[in-house]
Image 1 (cartoon, helix red, strand yellow):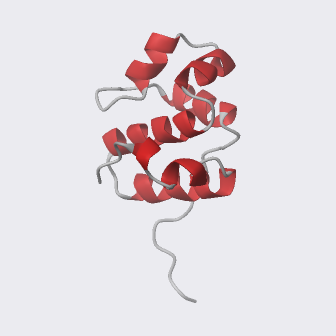
Image 2 (cartoon, helix red, strand yellow):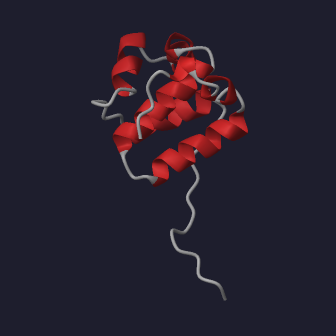
Image 3 (cartoon, helix red, strand yellow):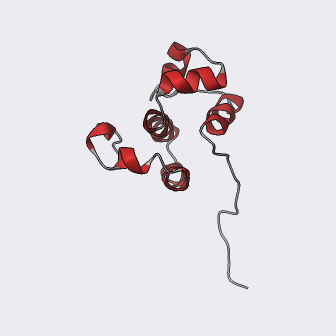
Length: 101
């Protein structure tokens, strides 16, 4: 999935809605690529005030935030949690396979 040129699509506006953003991130995460998830997380950040605003909210440096949310990023779990919290989101765990009873 290519997630670039976000500002040129309606997706940018849609990502301002926290419920839509949560579904978007969950869908991307289900694909299994951490690289794509980090780009998607950056897209949500850009739609909600930008990486600079997010860096202030998480008390992380702006440059560090850009690196964290890049394809080469390798953030710690605590960093991802902090970013999600600043965006008004949280991580949730569900069973992978739910069988009908």
